[in-house]
Length: 460
Ligand code: ARG
Image (cartoon, rainbow, N blue to C red):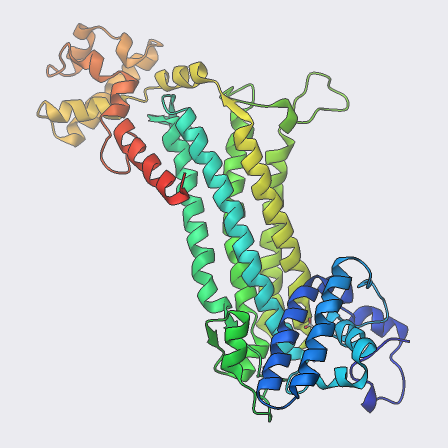
């Protein structure tokens, strides 16, 4: 027989299938520490409001502390099938310890505000953990950018070589993306960190609860203003899932580049053996499975976001059992995102760049054409005219299988008399890069400045 927290109104026990389908204990046991933390705060508040005596409250809080330790040590099995959810399991464990007194703990609350509280506490912690893990990846990016500061490479648009850039500049682009991801998580705390307790089932409680005190006790910065909203929305979970999706999208793009760059075709990076896997049939293979998996797992995180959005969209106020579906996707998102961040951090430390190959790639493919146009502008042409001239020059050089620098001065001057000897120095990719020292550009001074700022932000 299952242990119910709502048996009174029922003549018969639920069907076995109903228990199996209805129960959330298999996954919400993860919330045990938050459930106990919330219960302890609730109990202290009940005592302060004279709803429980001090003596009663201290017996309950002591027992709750014991239950937490027992669960931690594996002495109290949370796998127990006879419970519907973690709230029922802990309440039963409490009654086992302090007898009937344990039944007073639920005074002034409902599982609806209780689960909303647990989820907010969980998400608040998860945000903190994700932010730490993001910071670790950012640190790895910055270290790699610093170590490889002098390496030049082709920058791409449309996956076509576009203009020479510093590899450090390319890497630090990801630092910025992750910085915004951090910011998003941090800002969402304003909305997560709000106490729903006191909302009870949906209408608030008849007891004189001190919600402010409970908020202080649990470190919430505010209390919810509408009990029906507080028990029935999961927008804070959705926000988390969206922010996690954005991080995954960024990690996935980074992974995609590592996969491309480690291919024979690019040959830009080498991933250390420890971070690669082999093939069961092709002995020569060394596969970038890790970045592939990170890229692949982004799909499942997006899935969790869409799943919960869909679950929530048709629900009338206030609480509905559909909302129990908020948990597995969230927990899986936290686990997946955390390990993906950890893997990315490791990968960034496990790659070496092929400086020579990157430099060569920046020399081929007319990456300096824009700079030649700028050169002509400085010599007095309008930009449109200069663009046209260089376009024709590129065509001419390509037909002869040459780069712009391989053309003689006479050849160049056929296209524009303004071109002089100094053009060859001007078209060196390194000088193209060094001319872009405006803020945010790929010039070494500008990148050094960004790197410095990043290091300050990271405190390294
Ligand atoms: N397991 C439930 C959930 O996750 C807890 C709240 C149940 N409340 C109720 N009225 N059935 O949403």
